[in-house]
Amino acid sequence: MPVPRISAPFSRPLPIRPSAIFCAVVFGATALHADAQTALRTEVVAQGLDHPWAIAFIDAKNMLVTERSGKLLLIRPGQPTLNVGGLPKIAVGGQGGLLDVIADSKFTANRTIYFCYSEEANERTGGSGNSTALASARLSDDGKTLNDLKVLFSQKPKHHSGLHFGCRIVEHPDGTLFMTLGERSNRAPDAQTLDNHHGKVIRIRKDGSVPPDNPFVATNGALPEIWSYGHRNAQGAVLGSDGKLWLHEHGPQGGDEVNRVEAGKNYGWPVITYGEQYGGGKVGGGITAKAGMEQPVHQWTPSIAPSGMAVLQSERYGKAWQGSMFVGSLVFRNLERLEFKNGKVVRVEKLLPDLKERVRDVREGPDGYLYIATDESPGRILRLLPVR
Image (tube, rainbow, N blue to C red):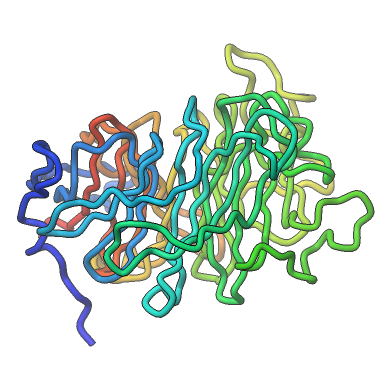
């Protein structure tokens, strides 16, 4: 069956906003290796957005896009963009707001989506402050509202901070959900203890219950949702070509990491890191390795401030790119391609050096092309096409 293409519908404007027009701009791509030179052109899918954070395709043409300011948009090529109603109360501020969204693998049948957001303490959660929450809902047939809203998980404890919410969601083929959780910045030591959700990856079922094979279910004093720990602030997560969970996380000043995440393992923060304190100085003991703590598969120093993550399955850009990992950079305002061999990064290629916009999300679309969300106001959704 041929892969559906959507470039023709994207040539028409979105009536919802005066600035929502489509165009194509060509950018180059510079590489760390001369033989890896690649050129891409970008096609505007939507613009005039308020800090878009995540993209989720619900079919071959239409996508949901979250805005950090608390709006969920249904973008339909050639039709007005819909502002989807029915969201829970969202604590917007700092790095918090409406963050990741994914469509259930059986969305066509059940219309279910999952999204995470920053949540203020309430009667249900108790405590005070805010934290990351994960919810499910059913998108109405007309796309205008969410129904059957259910909060599946709330990070504990709540904390007064506008920083480090984490919040990337991955559905596993076994029917469970992974979600990344930041350590809330000044609660870094919490990442090393199992009595809280700070600096963790959690794994739950789609009804919010805990799978009995989670690694700490039988550990006294540990929260049963925890899958892995010792993370800082992971804002990219994906199932790799090996079927395993991969994520990247922000280092403090250098030491951004790519990790292959396995059940029950400790990824070191804040005991080991390749970064340093903002303004200089050691983090913890200033060490990069310790027994019982995992080493990153790749690390960036200086920091690129990674966000968004995709592993390319298609051959749209040639076989050399198939299986590569793509990571957005907030600091350098570009896209990074990581090429792997035997589980190790053998090449890093810097793409879209002239983009000049913070890349917040990266997704592979149903058409096999990569899409990015730029974290600006106004921000854009761009489709990346190879220059032939």
